[in-house]
Length: 265
Image (tube, rainbow, N blue to C red; front, side, top):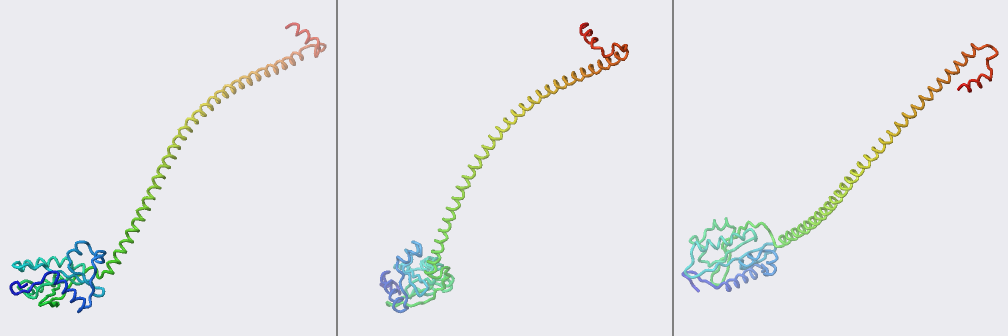
């Protein structure tokens, strides 16, 4: 199909030409959709028309939809903007355009370089590179992406283990808190019981002390009474001696005096 000075092909035909060019002439391999889905998100796999591998490098090819009467610089720039967002995912990103569109009238080489997008042109069933891709890719290869995904998975697994361990530690701490609370409650009860028991024991001791105090007073009273009686006995003996000294000789130590004294009482 010819539009103005451009010869256009269907998208399917262009992809066949692109595969033949890259596989046969470049020696690149096509990345199957199933493999691409393991590495890239669904939006990328759906919107990139062709994903290829050159050794460790990944190449994205986008085929703009060129419609009769709608070829304009703004339309091409829109496709360029779409392609540029994939520049950080692949080593190279290309737009596949008709040869006649690759001109300053539609596209600027400086802008292509800034976006990191290259241009492949086709004419009369042949494809060639018109402008190289200068991708600012962040992830270098599929193998590196897989390695990163593996590391992320390992980190996620370790994180889950840590979460489980933290949950277990928290569970143990909760149990310890419960045990500590139970011990505190028991100690409080024991302390309250001990205080009551101590108060009762103290009252018993004070009561006993009062009894002992009374007994001591009683004993002291008895002791004082005994002392008085002893003093009286000593005094009577002393008086008896003095009286004996005043008696005549025949009455001293006379046993009849005691007998007579008892009768007098």
